[in-house]
Each structure stands twice: as structure tokens, then as C-alpha cells.
Image (cartoon, rainbow, N blue to C red; front, top):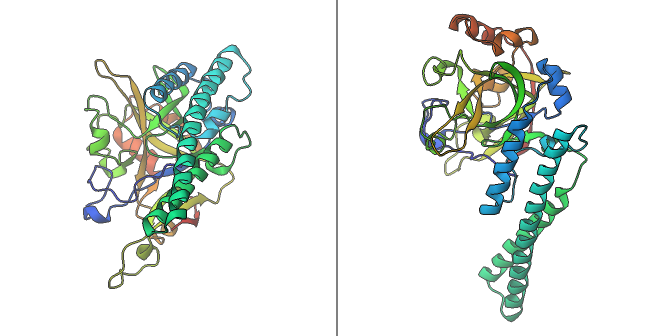
Length: 352
């Protein structure tokens, strides 16, 4: 599974003025709701932009054939939304997912064969003479063989696990937004590339999957008040330094270690996270729809873990106003963010 970088080397509009070496990603992953029926219920719309889903799958299938990539750019739960199609258009989408799986299977099988061959060669070399380098080569090859086997085993699994709903920067997931004059559910990339900017901004500012609330009238001013969205999510994940988590300075000679924490609200319903989105177009380039989650100062229980940001969960009664910002003052839109759901976030450690 792809992991976001634990340390960003570039300051961006969504980070604090910290030394570059200590900047850590914020809300780098979320556990999203990918069930279309549940999404429709939360967003009060049954309009699904199936054309956007098909276009995304066609593009990704072409990229896999042109340049192999072993991990899809969407959560498995999104794919499973079309496991039992009920109409012709959904059957077409299911067929595109099947084509994508077939391409991935061929690629994974080729990779497995390559690593098995590497492992056999490493074991033969060890039989001749044991060295540290040869032991390391066998270890690496065996690890990669296990990885390819796991990916192949997972390919046709239909019983969903919690991790199947997680998204990461530059992945696609469903959001709810007003697009082309109507409220829809459609896939967008989790890392916003504002319209009119160069595509290179993706590399220049790798943290644009989050939008700081105090930057809405600065970096995000052309989008805020125009293009709002909702990400329906059950949890979010943060990278936190071990010393920050333990509320202490680094010990002499100690290197900073990273923890991954899951924050899940003590609530029976999912969060409606406030987002911004935009449509990016350029001559000769593919049109891109992408979004960013708005973050703000965290509640005390999140801050106590050593993290300084938190996404903003909107109240359900404010959903319509947030998704229809046209004609509303900036002050009234900021008031919606202030009038957020006050949730208590339980957390547990996933990795160190």
C-alpha cells in the first residue's frame, strides 16, 4: 500500500512556518465512504457522474499498458461499488474495472516471475559462499516475492476490509459537489491542482491535498466561495513524531521516529469533511478534477498527540449552504466552518 512521505522538504500553503526538516504531512490519509448508496444518502443526491468514472478508468488502463504501475490509484471499495451492476452503464463500468484487474494481473505475474528468478539465483550464490551482500540479496528477493503473492491474492478478493476504504494523496475517490450546475457524486483526485496553474505545482507543493483554513483568502482565494465539496469519511490518519507524541524533546543522539495515528470520531455516523475542488484544463492535456480537504486547529485530544491540524466536519444541516456557495459572502461561508460538528476523536497507533 502506498504511504505518503512522512517529511516534506518543501514549504507549501498548507504547512506552518516550521523548519523544512520537521514538516510532517497532515491528514495524509482518510477512511472514506465509497458505497454509492450510502454516499447518496449523506449527500442527498442520486446523481452519479458515471461518465467521469468511465473516463478515469480508460485513462488509467491506458497508463498501465504504456507504463506499468502495480497499485491502482483508488481504494478497492470504490471498485467494489460496481461488483453487482444493475444497469447497462454500471455493467460497462464493471467491465472496465475487470480490464484493469486483468492488466494488473499480467503485470504482477511478470513481476513475481522476475523476483522468483532473482531469489533462486541468490540462493545458488549463497550455496557457493555466504556473504553479507548475498544474504541481503536473498532477503530482498524473498520480501518482494511475498509482496507480489499478496497482491495477486488480493486482486479478486470481494470481502472488504477496513483498509480497502483508505485513500492517499494523488488517489481518486468519490466526493459530493455541485459540478456543471447540479449536485453529483463523482471521482476526484485527492490533491488539488487549481485551474490556471502549471501541472508542475503537483511536485512543487506536494501537500496540496489539504487546504489550511487561514489560507482560504490567500492561496485558495480563487476557489473558496466557488467550488466546494464534501468528502464523506469515517476516520483520518496523521503522521506524528514519536517525541511529539510523548511530549518530550529529542534525546542526545536520538533520531526522530514517525508514528501513524488513526483518529476516529466517537460518532455513529460518518464525517462530512469540508473540501475545495477545481477543474484543471490545458491545451493537449487531460482534464483533471481534484480536491483538497480543509484543515484547521485541532481539538485538545488531537493536539495532545503532537499533531497541529484537523479536518473540519460540517454539520449535516449546513451541507446545502456549503455546497452552494454562489451568492454567499465569505463571512457566511467561514461561519459554516466555525459552526462545525464538535466531535471527540479517539486514536490508536497503526505504525512506528
